[in-house]
Image (cartoon, rainbow, N blue to C red; front, side):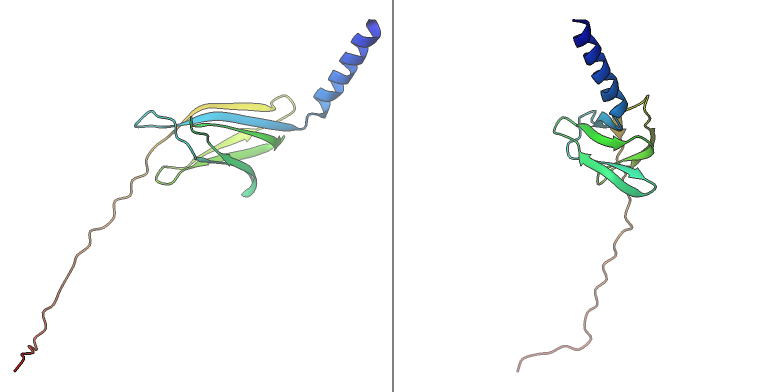
Length: 128
């Protein structure tokens, strides 16, 4: 019995040491509607180099795994909304980060007005 316990603890110890990747999860909602946002891009960057990414599910949740244990940035982007960038610091002690609820705000851009100008021809053609 002691041997089984020792082997279990020994293997568990090495499994914990061997863990060299992290994970991140959260939920994205619309600030105005307070509704989950599906299909939002969630990307992990290391000095402007894409490491991994994914999209939110129908309920606005996301989960990314196999993230290297180092200082990284998460970028959350959806067309028509302001981009959110947050710094993450993964380490052996901090392998799982929960961003909880992330609220995206609309990014409305006011376009300049369009002026339509028409000119009438000065030459008139008549049929005989």
